[in-house]
Length: 257
Ligand code: NAD
Ligand code: IMJ
View 1 (tube, protein in one colour):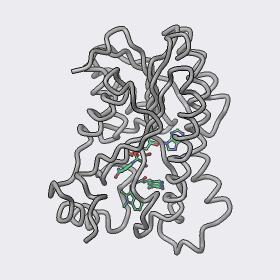
View 2 (tube, protein in one colour):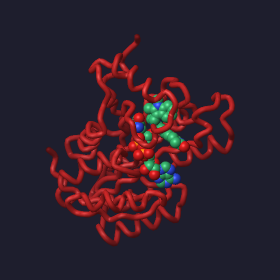
View 3 (tube, rainbow, N blue to C red):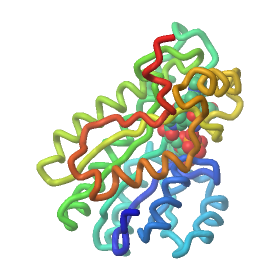
View 4 (cartoon, rainbow, N blue to C red):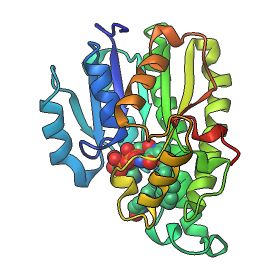
């Protein structure tokens, strides 16, 4: 197991105990990392509670990723408290609910803007904030979360598929930009997991069943498996990997029929 003792990380995207970002936070904390967690306003209590359950409570800070001032304040606090940063986890996605149920042709200009701002641009803004702090440590590693809906059409994924395609391209352009500073940027493409972002999506149970029946491993993935894959990419074991999308989906994506 990789040792992150003395390492500091920022994890963005914890809402509750089911969040994939929380599984990553647990994987990193149990390997010895000291964490900062950010929350979107409505999840303040939940995230504070979860933080108390970590070996060493995290630095818990508010951050709406659509706000440049919020993002600036987060990195200022991290600089004060940690004096640098070794890794960043981005586990944020959002589209207006109606965009995930209407025909794709009805995607609105505002719905498109919001989905791409929150789900893709935010990785650029956060990475920009992290870079100077990672340079102080001689390098760093960034991981974001994506979904196969970026390349294949899934019912109702709609503008989120477009946002994930933008996110994956963003991973490659960021990796090329910050690679010379020994900072790596990768994505994990997770299979479907019942989280808040999946709650109320009509037909989600059916999607879980289709994956379970067709994936080579004949089962769905668990958040803990995403946590461990992230720990690999964030660790020294992943030092040769950047600009990559690592599929952690029981092999579903290789199937033809
Ligand atoms: P989740 O609902 O627990 O996490 C989504 C997070 O995004 C929440 O913490 C929410 O607070 C945050 N968020 C949304 N808008 C924000 C804003 N304006 N500012 C700050 N934070 C904001 O669900 P999850 O499934 O853990 O999602 C995490 C990531 O994993 C997302 O990028 C999602 O697309 C991706 N993913 C999920 C699945 C799945 O099936 N659950 C599969 C593949 C990829
Ligand atoms: C979401 C919608 C439709 C199909 C879907 C999903 N499939 C999967 C998801 C097949 C796996 C979950 N996912 C990968 C996401 O990225 C979800 C993002 C999301 C979810 C919501 C629900 C609540 C809301 N806005 C959202 N924005 C983004 O109001």
